[in-house]
Image (cartoon, rainbow, N blue to C red; front, side, top):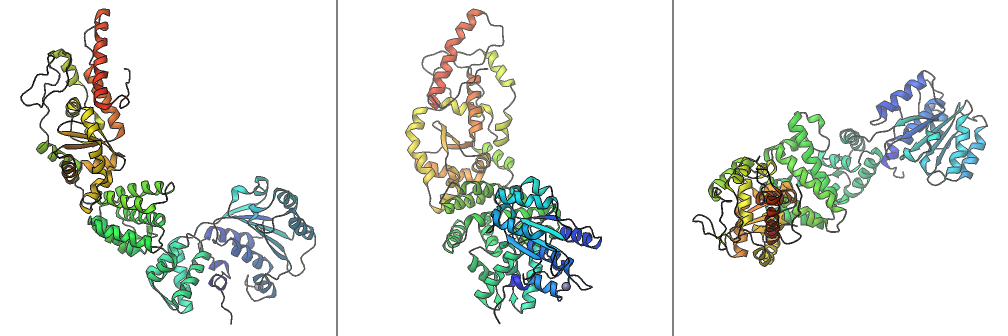
Length: 580
Ligand SMILES: [Zn+2]
């Protein structure tokens, strides 16, 4: 006997066997029972969700001559099943989309049914019809004969003419959920006498992406590959996807900051032809479902993960950490489309995730760090004298710039200003600390050290990578003898770099490349703009007293001084002057 594809063999023969479309099935059954059938139906939904199967079931039910409809045994049922019934016409608009086919079909509409009670026209992929064919059909849909029923099916309802849609009763078929597909698969492999482990069923159900027909095609192929005993590895091999166990392993390697193992796994996935973009989406789902589980405690909300897997992951990550991982993963999926090198993006993403894992609360660590490493800001930054030679202050490193004298009262105005909320949130460095660093920064030093910073970013030895990978696209905003302010990609990255253990690693690398110790602090571009503006306004603090015209004129050179200083630190294009 010839092998019959599973999706043919296990096509639903009754409405009860239709998988996952309860709302459609119930409405149709009621319409049949109450004799309230419409003359035109529009079945919308993704491929393989049962549109054609339900259409055929409807055709059988209304033409069946037995008591239990559809019986599957009477001549009408059998002929419809075999697609040989003279009154049930199936047309695939994807291949027969011309006006001639539709005209021919419509021509026959006027003849009464030959064998059954109803003539049923099933037009699949109806959105593929040409507009003249649509118009020909429209006339018939306006006034169909009593015995005639049209069932139009489409995966793209928005492409169907509104005038057609409005004449149909519309049903939307949903994607079938993974657990529902899995249960159906479990039943089928049982019927077929095949053993198939749970992970394998899960993988097949996921691969089907909501389509029961696809699920059965995948199962067919897996049976062909591994005969009577299907394992998750078999499915993974046939379809080039990673198993849940492997995904969990990868996340655990990330959690353990095992750079070598995670990179080796990515390499292996890539070598096996596993789609890394899909893998990234899978990891997002795995993390997302685990977070949902940790919040709700409900296993029935899990589709792609089992309770055991979610609990396993929660032993390794907190839900906050998982949410941060999701951020990074989602960020990475956005980058894939412009790149042919998915592997590098995924690797960098995993390295970033390593820094999330096991991070202590930011405030504790940054506080500790700055308590140890940062001297309290010298609280006399503005009371500098007019001398051409900078005055060496005992605690302070040599001042590089000359400054105009600033009145002490002005200083007070500055102190009273609200702290910068944005920066406060990131670090315990106050605006004054930043001001201090910026005041001591020298553009020439920064420019001379650009190649060194580049070397830091490009460090790819296993020890450095976890930190330096976060510096992709970063640059030095300012450099002084003792400090570097680095601008990095985003807030999450800045937070990660500023985390105590990462900062220690980074400063060690900087020391190796720069030849001396520097304190590093990471900021975002937004914060850079803020700092520049703060620096500027701090430098040219207007006097609180009323200005006379004369005084105003005197202020001009002071403003120019500030701009000079800004140019010295950042270069001509390194800052924007925002007029107050
Ligand atoms: Zn029948």
